[in-house]
Image 1 (cartoon, rainbow, N blue to C red):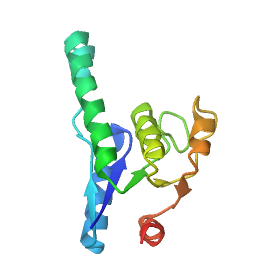
Image 2: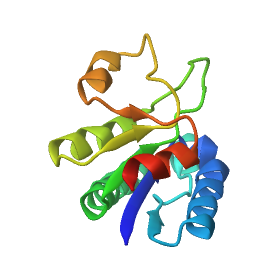
Image 3: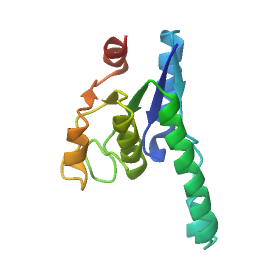
Image 4: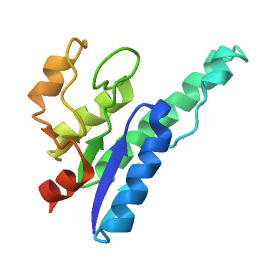
Length: 141
């Protein structure tokens, strides 16, 4: 059974869950891994506890790296966000770096974002743009 790691901005947590459900419900030879989908920014932004937030962020980063190690392929749901078409956030970019280093296929749901500080690096990973989950399954079969 192939393992697909799906990642996106946490603002798209529901989209990640929908993608997981769709893939697992329609293609029984795939298992989907998701990152932890809980937000912790209130610890920093409301409670003012930057130290605890940083400690949690550290743990989540390690967990995300372990997820990349466990998966067979990485899918980034790069929807338009924060005024940027096909946004790839920092954590998704880190996962792409790890997947690239581990020689794991990288898929983007939408085109590579333009005008981001790391657009050129994303291009150098040669991600495959799939546009929908049906194409994703065709590529990874």
